[in-house]
Length: 217
Image (tube, rainbow, N blue to C red; front, side, top):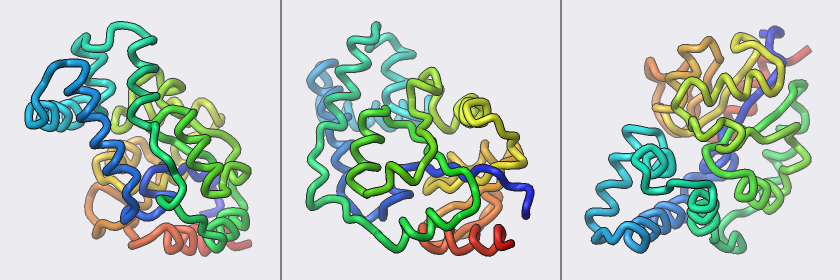
Protein backbone atom coordinates (compact mmCIF):
# COMPACT_ATOMS: atom_id res chain seq x y z
CA UNK A 1 0.00 0.00 0.00
CA UNK A 2 3.00 2.35 0.15
CA UNK A 3 2.62 2.92 -3.61
CA UNK A 4 0.02 5.67 -3.00
CA UNK A 5 0.98 9.31 -3.52
CA UNK A 6 -2.34 11.16 -3.89
CA UNK A 7 -5.79 10.87 -2.36
CA UNK A 8 -8.61 12.54 -4.29
CA UNK A 9 -11.93 13.39 -2.70
CA UNK A 10 -15.24 14.18 -4.23
CA UNK A 11 -16.59 17.16 -2.32
CA UNK A 12 -20.38 17.39 -2.06
CA UNK A 13 -21.82 14.73 0.25
CA UNK A 14 -18.35 13.23 0.67
CA UNK A 15 -16.49 15.82 2.72
CA UNK A 16 -19.70 16.51 4.61
CA UNK A 17 -22.59 14.14 5.45
CA UNK A 18 -25.23 13.24 2.88
CA UNK A 19 -27.93 14.10 5.42
CA UNK A 20 -27.41 17.84 4.90
CA UNK A 21 -29.83 19.82 2.75
CA UNK A 22 -27.20 21.44 0.52
CA UNK A 23 -27.33 19.12 -2.49
CA UNK A 24 -31.13 18.69 -2.45
CA UNK A 25 -31.33 22.50 -2.56
CA UNK A 26 -28.87 22.61 -5.48
CA UNK A 27 -31.05 20.06 -7.28
CA UNK A 28 -34.14 22.19 -6.66
CA UNK A 29 -32.35 25.22 -8.09
CA UNK A 30 -31.26 23.29 -11.18
CA UNK A 31 -34.88 22.37 -11.78
CA UNK A 32 -35.97 25.99 -11.24
CA UNK A 33 -33.30 27.23 -13.66
CA UNK A 34 -34.69 24.89 -16.34
CA UNK A 35 -38.23 26.06 -15.61
CA UNK A 36 -37.23 29.71 -15.89
CA UNK A 37 -34.86 29.47 -18.85
CA UNK A 38 -36.44 26.71 -20.95
CA UNK A 39 -40.11 27.32 -20.23
CA UNK A 40 -40.67 23.81 -18.86
CA UNK A 41 -43.23 22.77 -16.31
CA UNK A 42 -41.82 21.61 -12.95
CA UNK A 43 -42.50 17.98 -13.90
CA UNK A 44 -40.85 18.35 -17.31
CA UNK A 45 -37.82 20.10 -15.81
CA UNK A 46 -37.34 17.44 -13.12
CA UNK A 47 -37.62 14.67 -15.70
CA UNK A 48 -35.23 16.36 -18.12
CA UNK A 49 -32.75 17.06 -15.35
CA UNK A 50 -32.65 13.36 -14.51
CA UNK A 51 -32.28 12.40 -18.17
CA UNK A 52 -29.35 14.79 -18.54
CA UNK A 53 -27.71 13.45 -15.39
CA UNK A 54 -27.97 9.84 -16.55
CA UNK A 55 -26.84 10.58 -20.11
CA UNK A 56 -24.15 13.20 -19.54
CA UNK A 57 -23.17 12.96 -15.86
CA UNK A 58 -24.54 16.40 -14.95
CA UNK A 59 -27.48 18.57 -15.94
CA UNK A 60 -25.00 21.26 -16.95
CA UNK A 61 -23.30 19.02 -19.48
CA UNK A 62 -26.70 18.09 -20.90
CA UNK A 63 -27.70 21.73 -21.23
CA UNK A 64 -24.43 22.42 -23.04
CA UNK A 65 -24.54 19.38 -25.32
CA UNK A 66 -28.12 20.05 -26.38
CA UNK A 67 -27.43 23.75 -27.01
CA UNK A 68 -29.63 25.17 -24.26
CA UNK A 69 -26.53 26.99 -23.00
CA UNK A 70 -24.71 28.26 -26.04
CA UNK A 71 -21.89 30.32 -24.52
CA UNK A 72 -19.85 30.75 -21.35
CA UNK A 73 -22.01 33.62 -20.14
CA UNK A 74 -24.92 31.19 -19.97
CA UNK A 75 -22.79 28.55 -18.28
CA UNK A 76 -21.54 31.02 -15.69
CA UNK A 77 -25.07 32.26 -15.03
CA UNK A 78 -26.19 28.67 -14.45
CA UNK A 79 -23.32 27.93 -12.05
CA UNK A 80 -23.92 31.15 -10.14
CA UNK A 81 -27.65 30.51 -9.80
CA UNK A 82 -27.63 26.85 -8.76
CA UNK A 83 -24.94 27.35 -6.09
CA UNK A 84 -26.29 30.58 -4.62
CA UNK A 85 -27.16 28.95 -1.30
CA UNK A 86 -26.23 30.17 2.22
CA UNK A 87 -24.02 27.63 3.98
CA UNK A 88 -24.63 28.82 7.53
CA UNK A 89 -26.76 26.31 9.47
CA UNK A 90 -26.40 23.83 6.57
CA UNK A 91 -22.83 22.54 6.91
CA UNK A 92 -21.02 21.85 10.17
CA UNK A 93 -17.27 21.79 10.71
CA UNK A 94 -15.86 18.36 11.68
CA UNK A 95 -12.56 18.99 13.50
CA UNK A 96 -11.94 15.25 13.90
CA UNK A 97 -12.14 14.65 10.15
CA UNK A 98 -9.87 17.64 9.59
CA UNK A 99 -7.23 16.24 11.91
CA UNK A 100 -7.47 12.80 10.30
CA UNK A 101 -7.03 14.36 6.86
CA UNK A 102 -4.01 16.35 7.99
CA UNK A 103 -2.35 13.23 9.38
CA UNK A 104 -2.49 11.31 6.10
CA UNK A 105 1.04 11.11 4.63
CA UNK A 106 -0.31 11.70 1.12
CA UNK A 107 -0.94 14.62 -1.18
CA UNK A 108 -4.61 15.58 -0.91
CA UNK A 109 -6.88 17.13 -3.54
CA UNK A 110 -10.53 17.55 -4.51
CA UNK A 111 -12.23 16.39 -7.73
CA UNK A 112 -15.68 17.93 -8.03
CA UNK A 113 -18.33 18.37 -10.72
CA UNK A 114 -19.12 21.77 -9.23
CA UNK A 115 -17.35 25.01 -10.11
CA UNK A 116 -14.33 26.37 -8.27
CA UNK A 117 -16.32 29.18 -6.66
CA UNK A 118 -18.70 26.71 -5.00
CA UNK A 119 -15.83 24.44 -4.02
CA UNK A 120 -13.87 27.28 -2.42
CA UNK A 121 -16.93 28.45 -0.46
CA UNK A 122 -17.73 24.98 0.85
CA UNK A 123 -14.15 24.04 1.72
CA UNK A 124 -13.58 27.37 3.47
CA UNK A 125 -16.82 26.99 5.43
CA UNK A 126 -15.79 23.47 6.49
CA UNK A 127 -12.35 24.77 7.54
CA UNK A 128 -10.75 22.39 5.04
CA UNK A 129 -9.38 24.63 2.29
CA UNK A 130 -5.81 24.50 3.56
CA UNK A 131 -5.99 20.70 3.81
CA UNK A 132 -5.96 20.29 0.03
CA UNK A 133 -3.24 20.97 -2.48
CA UNK A 134 -5.75 21.90 -5.15
CA UNK A 135 -9.23 21.54 -6.59
CA UNK A 136 -10.04 20.09 -10.01
CA UNK A 137 -13.44 21.57 -10.87
CA UNK A 138 -15.82 21.36 -13.82
CA UNK A 139 -13.89 23.95 -15.81
CA UNK A 140 -10.55 22.23 -15.20
CA UNK A 141 -12.17 19.06 -16.56
CA UNK A 142 -13.17 21.02 -19.68
CA UNK A 143 -16.77 20.29 -18.62
CA UNK A 144 -16.28 16.53 -19.07
CA UNK A 145 -17.65 15.77 -15.61
CA UNK A 146 -17.54 12.55 -13.64
CA UNK A 147 -18.27 9.78 -14.58
CA UNK A 148 -16.57 10.60 -17.90
CA UNK A 149 -13.08 9.00 -17.74
CA UNK A 150 -11.60 12.28 -18.99
CA UNK A 151 -12.53 13.87 -15.67
CA UNK A 152 -10.30 11.50 -13.71
CA UNK A 153 -7.51 11.76 -16.24
CA UNK A 154 -7.61 15.54 -15.89
CA UNK A 155 -6.92 15.13 -12.17
CA UNK A 156 -4.11 12.63 -12.71
CA UNK A 157 -2.50 14.96 -15.25
CA UNK A 158 -2.92 17.99 -13.00
CA UNK A 159 -1.08 16.36 -10.10
CA UNK A 160 1.39 14.30 -12.11
CA UNK A 161 0.48 10.89 -10.73
CA UNK A 162 -0.61 7.57 -12.19
CA UNK A 163 -3.93 5.87 -11.54
CA UNK A 164 -2.14 3.18 -9.51
CA UNK A 165 -0.68 5.87 -7.22
CA UNK A 166 -4.10 7.39 -6.52
CA UNK A 167 -6.97 6.78 -4.08
CA UNK A 168 -10.40 8.24 -4.81
CA UNK A 169 -13.13 8.72 -2.15
CA UNK A 170 -16.64 9.31 -3.53
CA UNK A 171 -20.29 8.93 -2.49
CA UNK A 172 -21.79 7.74 -5.80
CA UNK A 173 -21.23 4.29 -7.37
CA UNK A 174 -21.61 5.60 -10.93
CA UNK A 175 -18.57 7.80 -10.25
CA UNK A 176 -16.37 5.19 -8.60
CA UNK A 177 -16.85 2.62 -11.37
CA UNK A 178 -14.89 4.43 -14.13
CA UNK A 179 -12.18 5.48 -11.67
CA UNK A 180 -11.75 1.85 -10.64
CA UNK A 181 -11.62 0.82 -14.31
CA UNK A 182 -8.73 3.24 -14.83
CA UNK A 183 -6.79 1.57 -12.02
CA UNK A 184 -7.50 4.09 -9.28
CA UNK A 185 -8.18 2.53 -5.86
CA UNK A 186 -11.71 3.59 -4.98
CA UNK A 187 -13.50 3.95 -1.64
CA UNK A 188 -17.28 4.37 -1.81
CA UNK A 189 -19.26 5.94 1.02
CA UNK A 190 -22.77 4.93 2.16
CA UNK A 191 -23.22 1.94 -0.19
CA UNK A 192 -22.42 -1.76 0.23
CA UNK A 193 -19.42 -3.25 -1.52
CA UNK A 194 -20.05 -4.02 -5.19
CA UNK A 195 -18.17 -4.29 -8.46
CA UNK A 196 -18.41 -0.48 -8.72
CA UNK A 197 -15.68 0.02 -6.11
CA UNK A 198 -12.66 -1.54 -4.43
CA UNK A 199 -13.78 -0.69 -0.90
CA UNK A 200 -17.00 0.50 0.73
CA UNK A 201 -17.43 2.18 4.13
CA UNK A 202 -20.31 4.00 5.83
CA UNK A 203 -18.66 7.38 6.44
CA UNK A 204 -15.79 9.74 5.66
CA UNK A 205 -14.12 9.10 9.00
CA UNK A 206 -14.09 5.37 8.33
CA UNK A 207 -12.59 5.97 4.89
CA UNK A 208 -9.87 8.06 6.52
CA UNK A 209 -9.25 5.34 9.11
CA UNK A 210 -8.86 2.80 6.32
CA UNK A 211 -6.39 4.93 4.40
CA UNK A 212 -4.55 5.71 7.63
CA UNK A 213 -4.01 1.98 8.15
CA UNK A 214 -2.70 1.57 4.59
CA UNK A 215 -0.21 4.40 4.95
CA UNK A 216 1.24 3.65 8.38
CA UNK A 217 5.01 3.72 8.33
